[in-house]
Each structure stands twice: as structure tokens, then as C-alpha cells.
Length: 395
Image (cartoon, rainbow, N blue to C red):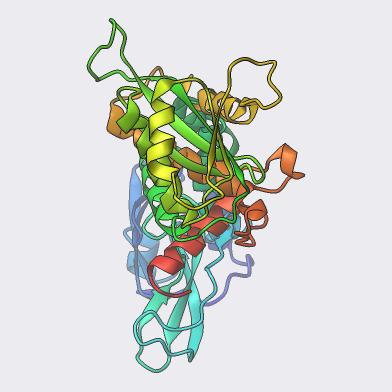
């Protein structure tokens, strides 16, 4: 075997090797160390093998003269050209802030190169104390797609784009081929991660809450009056537009109404409203009394709307329902009540922490409610990284 040291393009074999590369489709990769190169005269092909820094070839020129043949040069040039293209096209996936070794926590670390992934490269680190090698890509470990591609998929999904169209978008504009089940897997994984994180915060709410319910289509559920549907209850704060509670139930009785009020009390952590505004659904009357009545004044007052001409309305929560319908209308119905509840929980994360609200001058309801996570730029990516760091006790 021989070792290639320099490439000056001064020798005939080097020029012929470059000619082979220029023809295209002349080199076939068997594996990372083995390549098959077509003969220039069209008579068969030769196997080129790399062992460390040394190369060998089956051709007579290498076998009998023990020189670097044109086939070895062709493979060498092809690999160099590919490496240049990859370095120019593929972005390095920036790691999250690395403050210590994953194994021992030591801050004594150095960068040791790049790990090449299908859709990008990730920085690798070496701990000089314990010798542990690792990467830090909080929240996006063990996924082939870049954080950008994943967060694009999440954002489009909650803006009402179907999974099929999301797959098409990623293929056209990000050159990433994924399947609809893959997109759904991303949604489930990252929504659960973010929900566990944001549920730890207590919003600072105003004194007027709005509650209303909307019908949602459920494919696999018991029929009521010949229809497959359930009810989604949403309770919203007037001042901050913070979506306090979302519950999915099969009926609209007192116990169902109490569920959304009980969730709201838990989220508010003792902050009872001055007013709760609902429609005239009879279940609300007993539910509000049971959950919010106190012996001491001031008590929470229940305002039941009679018609649209009254001074107080429920347009705020009705607008929220319009946003939810933008998401559900392309889904042709949800699978079951459990899936529907997960969908409502996911929407609550999106609505409160990621979606700027026009009535709040572009701020999110969470920011208005005193929960400023300082998410800038790609808010999806920032929230996912914070959620993962919190889960691992790093923040």
C-alpha cells in the first residue's frame, strides 16, 4: 500500500483521476473504506480500498508498479470535493451552553471535532479530567433532523397546517425527507416535554375569567344523538389572555363544569377571580358556587350572559375557539377523548408561551402574566432546550 501525501495535479495519473471524477457516475461507494471505480477504457472496474491513510487498487498500474494510480486519485479527489460541499452546505448544529461534563460535571473541557449527522453537524467535547466524550444538544438528542426542521414542523402544525403538507414543506424548502408518523412523533415528544416544564410556573392573573365550551369531533367515541363529538371547556383570563384551563368531557353536566374550574384553581394557586363570566348553561351555576363560594367577602361573582347586547361578552374565549378550530379542521376529527385532551394541552402551551397576541402588542399571554422565559428568535427551540435542561436539573 502507498500513502497519498500531496496533490499537485502535475502528474498524468492525477490528471486522469480528475478526468474520471469529471465524467460523473464513475465511482461507486461500497462502504466508507471501499470504492469501485470504472475503467477509463470501459472494460470492467477496479476496487479501491483505504486502510488508515494508505490506499490500494486492483488495477495493474498499482499492482505491478506500486504507485498511486489514477483510480486512487479519482476516489481521493471525489472525497475531497464532497467534503468541501458538505462543509459549505451543512450547518453546524450549535450545542446548548456547555457548562460542565455530562459525566463528572467538570468545566475542564475542550472541543474535539464535529459529529457528522445526515442533516447537520454537532460539536463534540472531551472532558480533560475524566476522559468522557460527549455532545450537548439539549432536547434534540438522537434525532436525525436539525432543530430548525423539527421546530418548523411544530410551528406549522399549530398554525393549522396538515401533517401531509408539513412533510411536503420540509422536502421542498429544507431538503429533508420525513414521514407523517415522524412528524406526529416529534409533536408528541416535544409537547409533553414543554408541558411538564411550563406547568411549574404560576401566572399572575387578573380579576375576570371567561369560560365557555365548544363541540369537537371525535371519531372513536360513543354517539350522542347520532353524532360523534365531545365538549372542550376553556377558561381564559381577561387581562392577560392566559389560557388557564382546558378540559375535554363527554357531557356538559355539573361535574364536567367543575373539572375545568378545579384545574383553573390549581393553576392560579389561590388567586380567585372577582368575576367568572359564562353563558347560561345551567351546569355553571352549581359548579361555580361549589368551587368558589367562601364565607368571607369579597366573593367570586358569577356573571351569566343572556344576550349579545349586554355590556359584558364572551368574545375573548370565542376568539380562542376560532384559533382551536383552525387546528382541528384539517384533522377530520380526533381519534378519542384521550387524544383530544392531549391536543388541548398542547394548544395551551402554544397559545400561552409561543403565539404572540395582537391584543398584547405582540407579547405572549405568559409574558403578560409575569412568566418571561426570555425566548427570542426561534421560540420553539428555546423553550425545548429550557425544558430539557430543567428536566435534567441543569437550571
